[in-house]
Figure: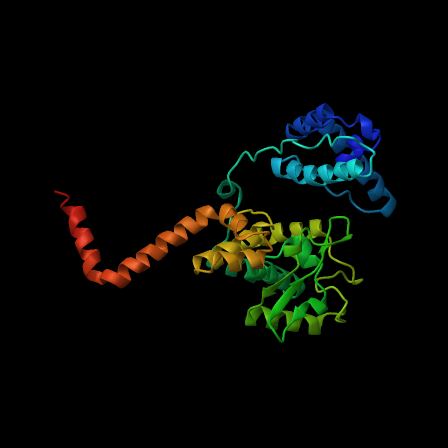
Length: 316
């Protein structure tokens, strides 16, 4: 979507640090080069839609700092291989600055509380749609990871859901983004039962069949899932959030109930607990305040609370 259209026609020796700096600057600012890529992607989608006799799907190319930063990682790796293979003497991407996010995590993520989660599930259509939403909010799995689940990944004996692959927007199977992304997520009894009932009702129930599939047995299209999610939010009377915010909702519920950061990190597939602490620091701050209040009550009880109230009324 971005790197090949911009750099694919260049010789390796033509990929300079200046060229990469200009690409990154234009990309973050949604500049002329980015707009050209967006127009081209929309033209390709229009041709495909006409060939397949379907409506055009919306095309959105990301240009957030995080999207650009994610692209810099494989770019740097590819050019480093060119150095190792003696195609380049120096990696021009070494030291290339990854753009900083313009917003803090708590300003971009929106989470559902337990009552809102129940409303969401009640508004979901019976069958696969409701089970998919339930699995998302009760496991914290990413959308592509959910779509990549097969029945062999559902371990009802040990109450584990295995994440072993992901489905990209083009329907291609992708390997996990990191070693920690391959993981076993704890399943609650209610989710295990819901998945069992879903399998019994499904036409595609063999071990290598996808848990959430089309009528043909192929993985669901991630864009269609997001559109379904938006429609369900509207029926439930809930604020519009991203499908990915169900993952944040899962994390926030674990934090609110005192789960250890290491456990949360393992469930989410983060590379380290520090990533979890950094991403959800604003939620942990609230959780820590609640825990300190519990300690206060355990040590001093109601008497201490009465003393504090008295002092606040008579500060002198």
